[in-house]
Image (cartoon, rainbow over all chains, first blue to last red; front, side, top):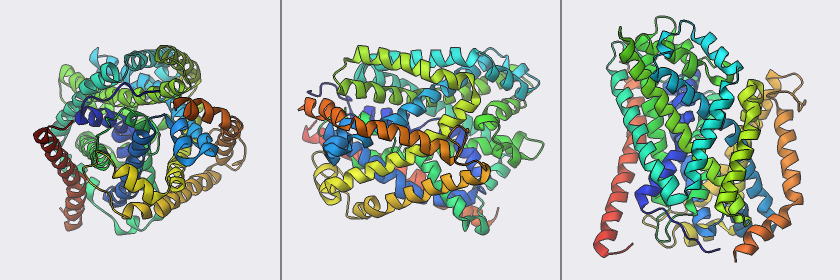
Length: 489
Length: 40
């Protein structure tokens, strides 16, 4: 299959990939995790893992996609060998599993944006009750449908007319809104206390291994590294496009936005909260929604005496959150669509199929919070395995050969040195092993029946669902390889 | 403000935001070069 569509410029590619990386994880998860891990104490390991996890894996994804010009199943099969297409399928499964419930989360953001625009959100007395009423009804299903509908329309239009065009509008708008909120937040009286907490380290906390593992997890979950999404967009890179410089720009851009969001939320909470601000930021609430959907709306109501002004700021925040979620969801839908295209299905049929399946399989998460939490747990941790499979693919190809021929090949502006070999060969696998074991062993402590696959959040349910799909993919490995790699020749 | 707060802020912001600015400037430089050389 000849490659026909490309991102028109380097900046179009960067903006679109930044749209993948910047999601709800930057805005709501980052602040919560910083608060739970001692503020400044968390930021040092977080910066270190930006260099040891995010940058190397984003480089890897760009390189694999550009080299193979196929979605993850074909790309992994082409580079690692015909026996390993199942690893690509697992990467697709993880991203698609996340897509099903991420669409629901995108719908929540849209609902709260509309509620803020109409002024209703600022008139709510009890925000917990308001959230519970919304989450337990049928509205999440309707907004899940709307989110999938919007995204399917964008992906249906293709790369240049769809993803690129919409990313050029959504991502800069998101950045402008975030910057506006950032300025407002740091100029609030008392905001400095939040900024102080955000940057103050505690040596005892820095030495806690859990803080390091949380910092690594945050990088793994919010940069888009190892998801297979960047790999999919890289299919549409021009031949003379650089890899390493673009990848670094994405990784640093993503974490810069996390910092802006973090400073904004800490400043706002410390300036406006009369009770224990730290407790408010670090509280999880149902499906980790506490800070974003329950506490922040309450704080926006205290910004000024004017309901109108408060509604403007609340609307801006939820619009930014909606755009961040939307651009990430677009890439997930594109990944699933591209996978079907690799199997010989046309884009129109593929997107129709993906959107119907996404709506149906996302519906249980829209209607049942426990189901959403289960899927978030299973595929969130599964993401770390995806990172390991990407590193394995490069090792099978030959790390040095991959670095010289693919990363430093045609179009590269900046050459990557031998440090990359060490990171991919040793550090990425080490980080995956540490994280997967830590998360699974931790789950034993919160669930005595840790082996039970029908519980919401434990080792048993994760291992059961991973094994189920891996066995299935190994059975169909040969078929998938033939349909994607051999048919593309 | 404590000295360790200032040091952490300087390290984190200079690495992350400084890194971003550095890579943007590099990308702009290479794009300009490609334009001057008439390459794609």
